[in-house]
Length: 241
Image 1 (cartoon, rainbow, N blue to C red):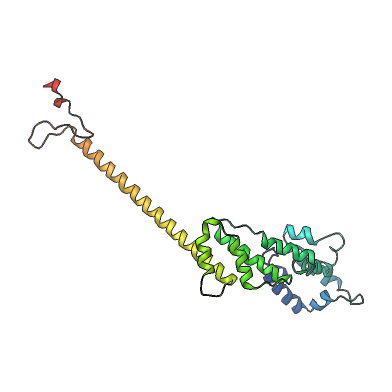
Image 2 (image 1 turned 90 degrees about the vertical axis):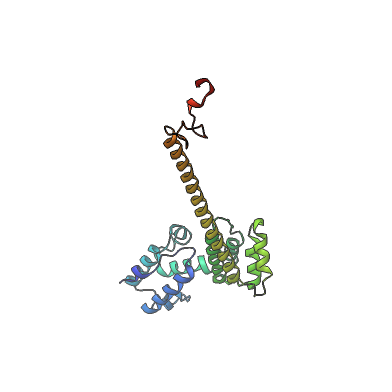
């Protein structure tokens, strides 16, 4: 299986995993040091290797990353492409660090998308680490809790007043458990409502069948059946007597 087939697509959320796999692959090919050499007199890549690596880098990035990394100046050089990709995701330059931090700071919480929110937060924090921003766990945890809606104040207090260390993983676990419990309760309530609705329909159907079946019948004494709810016997009218 070729390197092109085994290397994952580079997305905004999987840079850390993809970086490890790509680095291992380049080390295996013996070209990692050549790609990362900064000296002007470092030997260039051989033509066939440069072509293969260009194909590998360009074909394994999404359109957003392509727009932000590939240019007319670097598309012909695997070394330049490799540097542009690393700068995009892991550069310690202030502009890139600010961009990554803003992505985390302004991540939105949506009450009906708990799982997506937890995933987005974990990805955003991994990006912070990649660009050299490592905040204390409790600070990150407070920033996550700050994003929750006012309707979740009770959950926030439960998390903050826990006797366990306040970490990102602890907060994410609590959010996941809370979401799972809510989903289970909603599913159970829906099942109960459906069962009650079916029972009500069955009762109505049973009463209607009784009424229809007794319209031509007689009373317990053998005489005409008396008027009842849902059934009128005209013979019981005073005018018919």
